[in-house]
Image (tube, rainbow, N blue to C red; front, side):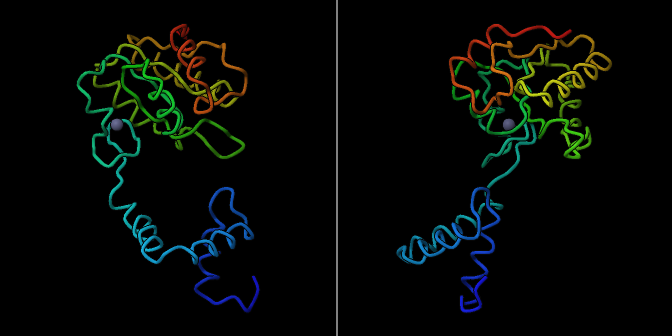
Length: 203
Ligand SMILES: [Zn+2]
């Protein structure tokens, strides 16, 4: 970066440019925009970033982000406790839940098996899943992992584990009306609702 850029600005731009979608140039534009904000607003943004770690927790039940533990979904006593929907990431859980047609529990796997990207079973939150199924409340595990090759591989890995360790648990997955390659978080509500309604047994 240019030598004449003052050090504090340079440091900020360098940090901002690590954010997804922000290269060095757009990070500089963002930093310049921040400088034009009223001081109270920039301070509030700074405080928000500063407090993020303190005020956000990972829900110990589902692994989702929340300001409480357990999160609002997991502590909702109206929800069915015998159905567990397994999603890749937290934003997939948000998308599914915003639809309002699923009333069971969730668990976030934390990724998909992708050997080329060094994502093996250790990178997934298998412990949380095994522990959850081990509680014996869950009768059906719905795999909502998407329709990519990685999702397929991960689904069969999970199905084998469940068959071996929890043979009484039914494993299903979202119906395959989902366009190939689709990720759950990008699916529209109606497609999602139908693929849940017409979910298919995997065992
Ligand atoms: Zn939760």
